[in-house]
Image 1 (cartoon, rainbow, N blue to C red):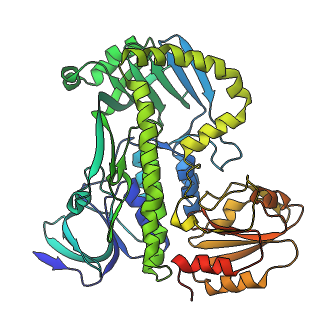
Image 2 (image 1 turned 45 degrees about the horizontal axis):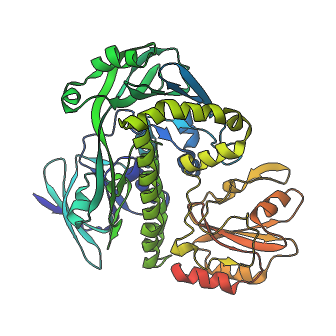
Image 3 (image 1 turned 90 degrees about the horizontal axis):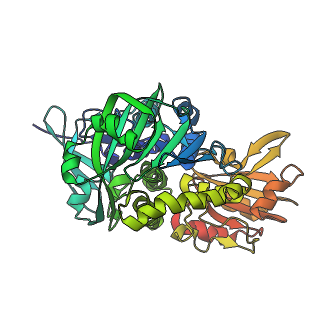
Length: 533
């Protein structure tokens, strides 16, 4: 039986993994009508993507769910690296990014719990995921998309929707129907992954990596005495086909010379790592996000986090277009901002993956003997120089991602700022200051779902800027931050000497900045993408 929905849906999200769920949550926050479907019977029930980066926690904080996430996960205290079971190095990471973010650490939360967290958020807004519902095919034109769905009861349904988001993973059916090439390669080495109980002489808040002539693996703490273990399977295809949890339990840890006893496996899988990227992330009214758009090696824990940021980047743009607050051209900035980041992440993670897994004789020698030598030389420096750890944290935690080449960041500066001041396309820096005697951070002032215009004024508020803000009150809020001894640090960090203003995007990235009281330039910038009242 075929049914047809008369009421149009603003957005159809295909895939209810972390990326699709984040997209749904962001649309729910903005009261955009949507449906989210998944052909699976239920959500993930294993650890999956495990590490939540600081930038993702910042997004969770904007949503009001960061502390709930932290209660159900583990903050890593240190990373331990062992070479041939002999040489060992410890890297404290609990506050490695202190001063850069509200969440200056590595945080571990099982994917099953991340999905539950986002699902609960959806439920609180009156939405549910439609499981056992499959997109069969679709067509699109200038007015919208017509999608054919197969519901759990086997009946077909015709759905009219404005936009379609493909969050259906690396084997995306949407991407296939759009005929968008998914170029890249598959690493030849075989990997294993398992969740199990473990008895080990390792603190329950420590991440451990072990490299030896015979094995390469990582241990990641889970709650309730459980561990996530993944690593390289030695040998060829024949060994892979027979490889099981028993082999890890009896053989692998013997080869690494570590005393670890494993039992009660909850999940075990053998897989290959892929590095692929879609040729385009957008085709007319269809968008690719997460693994449907790009996949890369698990090294660095970037995969799920970049997918969440894809959705976070796209949702506010689609919402503003649907709400007639922005022009359609705003949607083109999704690809221009995300595509370059995805390709850079693929390249960097692939390089590191080869370094830690390659069986090439010279690379193994470098991995087992040169790297520990280098770490030994750097140990005193790493312990004393925060600048190096901060550099690494920015890269891994994704707070260093910037959109300076985006069309949204062009011709977006008025006046001359100091070289150290942030630029359009940068994430709004995490800056503490005091306001009315209370400790405050600039991030806390830009937690809404629209644009935020900060006006900095030492000698009176520029009326012209306020008038421009009044034309866009339906999509931006305005706040005046006067110069006082308490806000001096904020002015200095942002490069404001006398007066000026910063326009912050809904995703807490800097859209526009000025150190002059003029307003015509700002109005011209806003007119490029946004619609005034």
